[in-house]
Structures are given as structure tokens and as C-alpha cells.
Length: 87
Image (cartoon, rainbow, N blue to C red; front, side, top):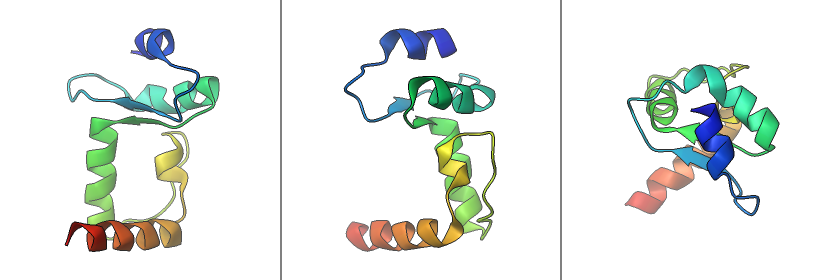
């Protein structure tokens, strides 16, 4: 996964999204972000993050990419804006 992301990265891209639920990515996300100097998100990571937020789990967790390191206050504000825009 790491080699594929590294090979296909575009320097002009602001981030990388890995759209696949059958790839093991969690243990590589932080390494890829550190190497590419941009956010790297995977489908599974985002699904678990969303489920945790909806269950009220908002503690920052290090080592699994920038999505998990953000403060709970920031996430709550962004979620409110996202949900409002869906209405």
C-alpha cells in the first residue's frame, strides 16, 4: 500500500484518499503522512472515526494519521457544519 501511494502521489494534491475497504492501511497512515507531508485518509479509517464521533468518543489518538489527532472541539464544530449542509 505504501509503495502504491508513494508512486501515485501528485505533488500538487493537498491530500491522499485511499478508497478501498480491503487494504490494510491503518498502521501505515502516519508513516505516509510524515513522508508525503500531507493528510492521508482511508475508507476504513474514516468510517471508524465517524462511528467513534457519533458514539461520543472524541479523544485525540496519535500514530494513526492527522484525522485522529485533531481536537474534539474542532471536530464537533466541523461535524455541525457538515450535518447542517446536508439538510
